[in-house]
Image 1 (cartoon, rainbow, N blue to C red):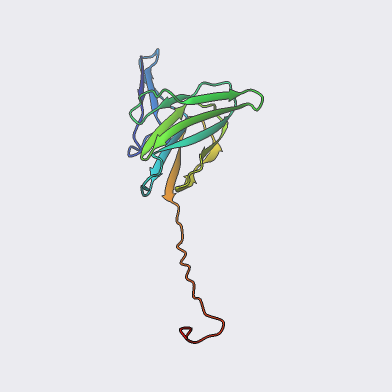
Image 2 (cartoon, rainbow, N blue to C red; image 1 turned 180 degrees about the horizontal axis):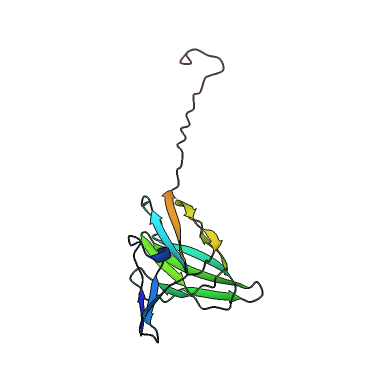
Length: 171
């Protein structure tokens, strides 16, 4: 029987990844970590009128694999767009994340390069950690996307009108 464990980020697991365990023919427990990436979204400060869902694009080299998508409790996620472009040999994953949400993308091939980006926002500037890398064997790499509000300056304009003839114009 197969058994999967998907830890939260507060749990220190082997290779910082999920573990899959099963009993082999010899009756002993075998453990193999999942491999892929986890993508987490953080918003440092909410902005009135700003979006609450953020479009994240993950581009992965290769098309000969089927990624799996899980939440932090190990539940399978659906409704995530996966487009395989055979001419460029890239798989494009598009998902929407809210603040403080994480998605695990597993079943990625060892050695595949990946990049993570976020759709531009009028309200936030994203900062990334591990936004580009290579999928390592038996490793789950954490990618972080942190949004901070865009800062706009203030501009004060004043106008002073001085009559060309000077003095009092009453008489």
